[in-house]
Length: 299
Image 1 (cartoon, rainbow, N blue to C red):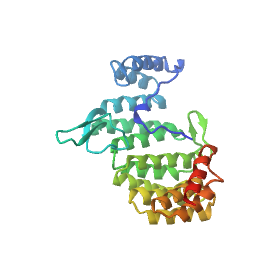
Image 2 (tube, rainbow, N blue to C red; image 1 turned 30 degrees about the vertical axis):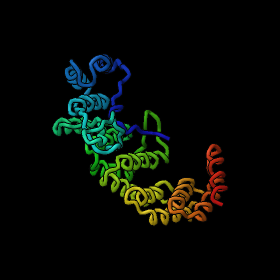
Image 3 (cartoon, helix red, strand yellow; image 1 turned 60 degrees about the horizontal axis):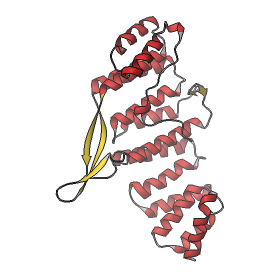
């Protein structure tokens, strides 16, 4: 289930017009639709809107979008790898030696204008402290700004995970008890997908932090296995971690499948068969024929 969008390019949204704000929202939406969040006339409308209603969180979000758009520039960069900061290349070419060179679109930020954006967002959060949409915007902006070293994003998410006394809402609806841990798992995946050493460390740290808060959710415990397997390439530690998960959650699909994959990689047919037999009882119907065929092949 996807609650949050981790792509900053999709963080800009329009607001429904409201007569109480003297049609400033309508004028803002119209300008943004024609010229973008930092286009001609937008700043003037925001100044007037803020004077008319300084306690409206939506004008602070509009100000955040304005400064973030001005702060960010896009550049095409070349890298020697086919995945960079979780992105696939725009295109690939060969250099004069025949080596593949990959081109990616990367975001860069002006520090001062980015700071202006965050301060505007903080004002929106102060005015509407129960709205998770605004807090996710802040986490997402940190991830985009910090790129491969998400220190601020990690600290902010850990702080958000333990906040109490809030009746959270998201997208205008009340957020249930499962909302925060599911959202945090998405952020764990975001760090994992970025793939740098610092991002993988953040993936591990946030996962361990969430295990302490939610010991009965297997996803975060499986993350530790993924860190061992992919982050530090230690399949022995990974198998041990997944086996630990299965002691507490014997029918966990992720742990069973990864145990089977590790055993196959290690040419352990007996172990692979054992985990595949258990996986049959929890795997979706469309995967079962392939699992049965693999079992027949190795037995």
